[in-house]
Length: 206
Image (spheres, helix red, strand yellow):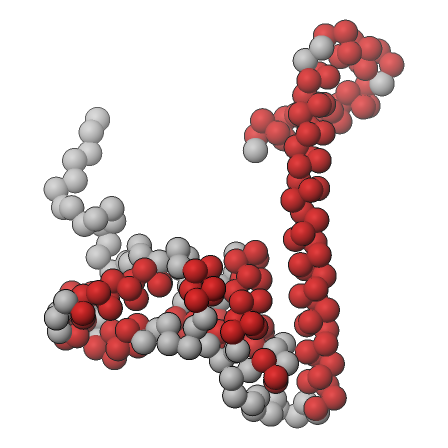
């Protein structure tokens, strides 16, 4: 049985869904405008209102080049980018790196990172947060900075730990490829053999 599509819609049968990364779409819009395509025509072609086109056109104003490069191939909500633009360049980079490492680009996460940003690293001073005192806000910022440092330390160690794990699993797999080793483990250490077999099964399933 064969299904034949009679409608070519550039890899998707839903015209409402953009498969372009957010920054790629921005660059496409800029290129079209530079070639003289009216904003109204772009809005009709993309099935959005003209204010959305104007918003996307100025999307990267206030973003540092390093962050643009980090996010260029990712689907990042427009509101998330707006939150990043409230930070100074160095903090933008830190926040974007955390988002990429966590694979989390939601507006909620962006707002949390913004709330944890020291005032010195903001483009504009913070508005007072409800009934929180200056001391409470300062404590939140210190805790967030500590979490950032802990996360980066874990991230730096992950590469070496992952390599050790891959090598160890490979060694266990080679051991279980030796019939004499397997017989010995089955006879004298069946519990260890069982755990080794589980490890190699997980490796095959990965």
